[in-house]
Image (cartoon, helix red, strand yellow):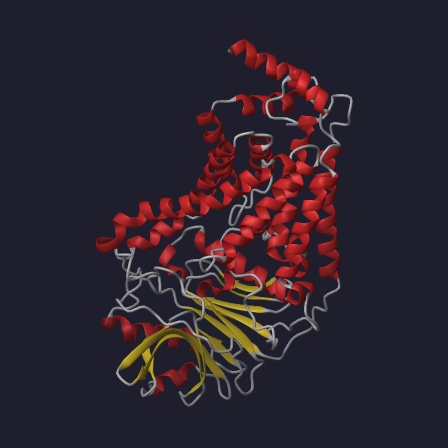
Length: 548
């Protein structure tokens, strides 16, 4: 057996640069358990390319190995197991922070932390299993097309993950580039799903060297990947160079980050002190010249009802002639039926509510329990009653302010779904409360996703988080002002202007994703044969699964 494995490695080296070919042959000839372990490790590496680490070069290793492991595998069960193992490593590493939320009410929920993270990761890994199966089909093997097969399959299943069963498009691989303003500019044309497609192509391209003859240029495929990456950066830099730095809307903002611990947030005895904290931070330095004060999700510590009157003290946080916009829990009464909403309310200087938006995309198990009549679970959040989902317009238009689209918490992670297509707002407002997740990677990931919505839509973004990250972001995704995770205070800044017209992505939406997938499928067919060993060579050297 060792002799046969050595012969396989040696013969593989006859058709490709020896180092990569040997590594590819070794990975393909490994036992099933070892292949699954390598796939799991590759998924872990891929997670470190995402915020806040942004170790993007690791994607070359992770997607290159994934390509080798699934390419040409005749048994779909092996491909599915490989993809599932990759996904388990990827999601468990990237989503570990979800477990932290179970320790806010540790006595009741701490025991669920590990099972919840592993269970969710195992479910999400089914999408990467589907990716591997699709990329391993006979029609997807051969030549440079195998890279586009992997990219097309990956993007297809990312889109499915983001849209079915309420959707969970967290940690799409395209977010790896959010460390750089120039690199995120393509999102204005192709969105984050398109960026994922390009990312997988660039990451997997160098792995094609393992299929080439030693006489061929060893730098062809890595060179193509480097050249394309540099071109993306250059085009993004050129787009940013055309911006008028003096442009503005004339609206002056103050974004307040209260830093209230989640364990204290809903204690009745803490309500007054929490309100005073936000009022004090809002008034710090005076409100002269400020038009709008923004508080985070559910920052207002009192329940807002149809019949209630807001405390007069709230007006202390409202600029003269301006507004306080805050997240709040709201209750409505219809006969004997009460409904509760996670809302954004605009409050004027007389402590009157001038506008309301109710959250439309609720968090499963956080704000409601899906299939409650079947599943014996409780919500993570306080209370036993499920919140109601809003159905009204996303546009909130109050006199004296540019109309805006509120996004409560994770509503900001859904590309193409943050505005109503009929009426375009002037800016995006994301209020959130990431105190559930402590000093983890989760809040950094959340901020990066919200920031990319600004680039996709060509709209500035104002973000207020209870414990951070709060920021003012322009329509190109550049951060004009920011308060870091775990800090308490307020940031002042001007509201940046929107782009004059809609971005290409804002006009095309998911249509551009489907066009890219069609182009990827065509590339698989057109590039299927060139660049790899001939079928006769495969047969002669008994390349396991190659060319079958």
